[in-house]
Image 1 (spheres, rainbow, N blue to C red):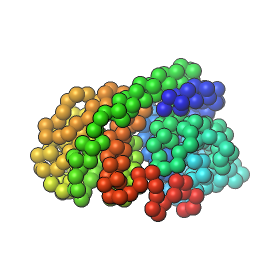
Image 2: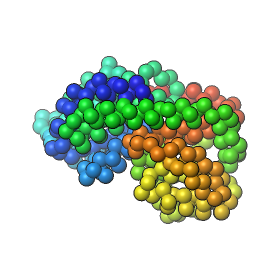
Image 3: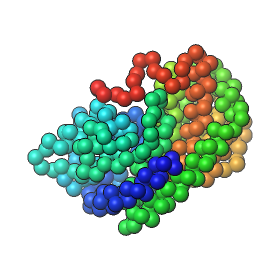
Image 4: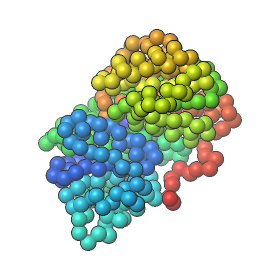
Length: 336
């Protein structure tokens, strides 16, 4: 995160070039898997500033929604490898148009990749080499996409990247504190136990941690986990509540934290094991709580996801799996 914050500051001139056309047309955020999840905080942040920036997964955009994009539009394509099949497909499909080609900004780990070569502006997260499930590349992408979102909302990209870099350092310090807590991973494993149903709930920017957290558990542990927008859980899935359910509620968004804590208490009263990740020291009754503190909205998912990553690590070991390996998938998905 610290490296990515510095990388964004070093690329302030590129952010300045990118931000200008973003203010003239529609903004679309796009990715697959963890790179799609990265887009939630920026989409939420921009919307809070009165700027519509919808998200599309790259496969849906490529096959069904490409006709919605036109020349004045601004497309942010996120792919940690720069080789994800669907995201590269979107860039190629836009590039072969005779007219109506939007501005394409790519966010990748390094720029020696196919996607970066197709962009008008190529931003580098400088995450470094990663061989297993996405952890470093996820948070580094959060930082650089966050810097771009800030640059779009201000006329001073240098100030935006300085703010972003300082926020990245604060969140990185929180991540370090969580990882250094002796016994936290084991306590999380005990909290989950052998429950057969697991959900991760989040809203707004916190959906990045919820969606990516569930993806990580599925990928690392081979355990089915569902991520839902918190309010959606009441619309049917509430029937999952009970002794067999482990529910992780990420209650870090100020606008909805009280509602999220109330749901956590209700689930605990219904017999579920509830882990509540909060931004204050309020422990909802009957739950296990982890306080990550009040952090920058664009980057807070990097801290909120850490307890879920630690849980995935311990559950994988308990099930005889290598937390950094794959059974069926691969690190980079190069075919659809």
